[in-house]
Length: 94
Image 1 (cartoon, rainbow, N blue to C red):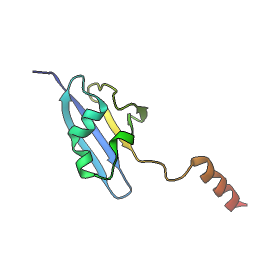
Image 2 (cartoon, rainbow, N blue to C red; image 1 turned 180 degrees about the vertical axis):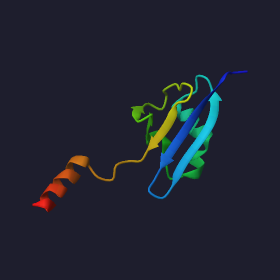
Image 3 (tube, one colour; image 1 turned 90 degrees about the vertical axis):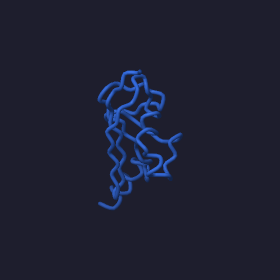
């Protein structure tokens, strides 16, 4: 029997929060943990193959091997380019 490690999978929108604690086999990847959490079933419009994911706020690849107590985060795409948004705010202030 494979050793299990505890991880947490998180995803949030302005209206919805997904937070799931689970145990996965040691050596599992980010992608395996997200799939095991059930997130793709609860948020079917999310495309995991193109999703940006990370561990504790640092972007990682889907094939990153997890360690015990990692918090896996699935990030939403940006709605606007940050530089362009700053420019628009600066123009509005003048």
